[in-house]
Image (cartoon, rainbow, N blue to C red; front, side, top):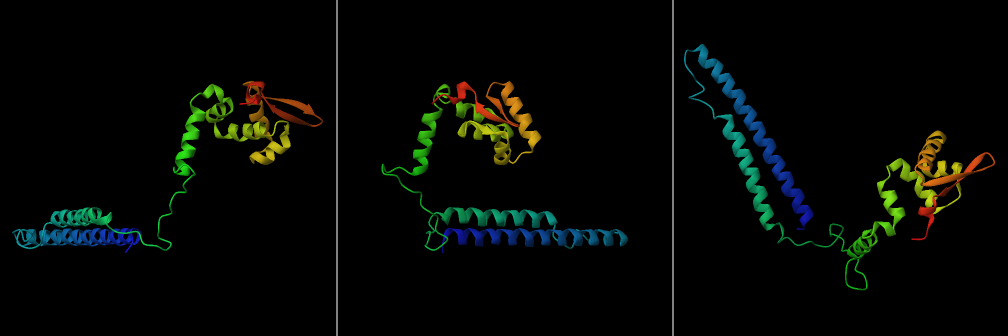
Length: 194
């Protein structure tokens, strides 16, 4: 049996224990209320004679669910992961023997060690999502028109115009009029080679 199937079976077992225990707790509580009401009519307490306290059912349910969970977790690592679609995929390994994810993380940390060397990434990290969606195409395609920018960002014409104006005020880009539209360029500090 593989881990995923075992996780599913044990999870379902815990859910069944909790549901059955909850039902027994509710039933014992209702029975106690009925017997308690009958006892006051008869001048004594029948609840002390009949029925189990619902608290015991609730505690027992939690205890059984906890025991099942703890026992499973102790033996879970010994379960093998057998083939088929349930097998966890292995991470691709690069030529140096490290996983590709660890190589990418190393390169990412190298790039972010000195933020002044990477002004584009630094600015993009600090901008809100809507401004980033406008500035990224300008950085990758300097001279893009506002119409092309609207198409790439999926914003309305007014949203693009407003956001471009805000970014222009901050000195992150500038625009030059060309006919009835504008061509937008990154500022000098952002357009320098990295």
